[in-house]
Length: 504
Image 1 (cartoon, rainbow, N blue to C red):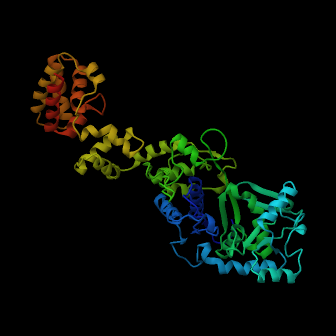
Image 2 (image 1 turned 60 degrees about the vertical axis):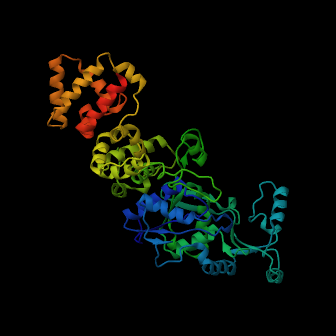
Image 3 (image 1 turned 180 degrees about the vertical axis):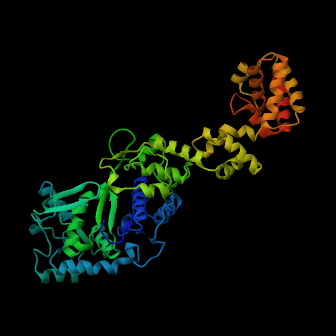
């Protein structure tokens, strides 16, 4: 690790919802920065005006805030290296375009889309490079006067980077080791378009990383092919000494089959691929982890282990533990299968770990939806008894609604199996016994009822199963005396009485 301060950046484009793969990239940047006492920058790469989507930038910021990924500077955070939106940095890029042109490291090209299409038909696998640039309309094949005249006329042009052929470009990658690519396979990339006076991703990226003193670029594997070009651009500007170290993260792969994870996989298999619900103007709503009931800590923990291993068997880790353990060299080179069922498992683990009060708070809106208002202490008690049975907060209603709402009907199957000829008589007797219990604690009830069963010579299973049916309406729930204790004596007796009347 060099002596310079660690500064990383997450630089999404506001072209739609933030994909879960992008979230993982942000997370790895965050863990790396925090571990090295460094800074994390949020930069918005909005130079592609055609693909801009209203609301996307705010969505990205809200998503990362919800997940606990915090920035030190950047869009909506401020800082000394702004502005942090590329569209607001136009004036900065132009001087660097001019520098490359003046140094003969770039050239102006006037080829229209139609002319380029013609060339593609004429030359198989055509790319604009050292072998073809001499047959095109650009400042390398035209006189300065012609070029100036066309610009003065207002003809649209692009600036292309002039790549020298047959040179081995070395990229030192923290995950993949040394990657060597021959410059002959690279094309003369467009760096700037006169049409919107904006640079392309390649130029803006390099200039911003340099000016914002970024020390490490941690990004998805899909950017690996552009790394050699970025190395060459750093060299063209004479910035080799400040070139960041690169780390290209493995892809997130489909849960089944081959290829990278897409929204279609989520739609088909029923899991979200976006952190928050996304409602674009087109109207098609995409599900999000937050609205699907995932806890942010569970999403973070699940994502962290897709492509990185902490070097031990630990799976459940807080953000602080991950920061301590994170090592970029322990990221895998090969893609990570997106095991969405593991995401559900993590959510279950985090529900168990959270204090009952916190889970109860999250459960209150679900109760309200079902028209239930209950004392908070009762909700906390019920959650404590039942949370080990669910993977999502909303599932609590199905497993414990009977604590809040008396059964309106009785499950037929359970009645057939559990309600015997003498059940009504036994339950009437049991109700009298319960009415007389003074210590209505779990232990107090159990002692009295069990003595009564023994004294009468009744079958414990038959009594308890019928008792459960009267309070719950079916054969589910925790220990019987836990249920009656939470319901209280009055409600327990009322439910028993009604069951005896209905079931006879």
